[in-house]
Length: 185
Image 1 (tube, rainbow, N blue to C red):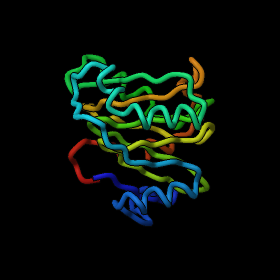
Image 2: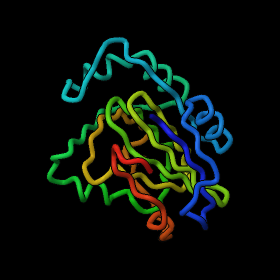
Image 3: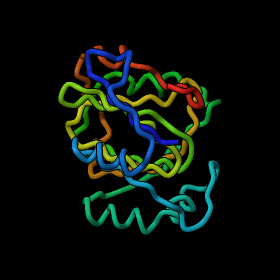
């Protein structure tokens, strides 16, 4: 189940609020400029399906987003728990960073944890299958796929280097809970 917890940035031990209803998550995130949507496939898909089949299942939503937001390309990324590079992949975006373009991810399968550091608070968003999150360009955040990552996601891009992270040097991300799929946070 998708979830949003909000923490004071100086108090990672106790959330100020928690919600798991999609409408409440979307409405709260909208106040900080983050889009959060639910998508349904036009036909069933599963991890291991060809990227073309996955993209076809969400084509109408993909086309809508590309048209309204100016994205130039999409791809499908799939990471399994037995990936030999999983530790390095996880570590890559665990520290606070920002991007030069919106970071838009749709979770086809699996899950991941986005934390956004905005206005003295940390918004921890557990994204699961069916969730789309759009983190605005310049928004400081981090992403944790967990120690045994398992997800398939569609990524949207406007520029070839838009995914490059610009790290803040802050240690705030190390102070907040890490993600372990299936574990209550």
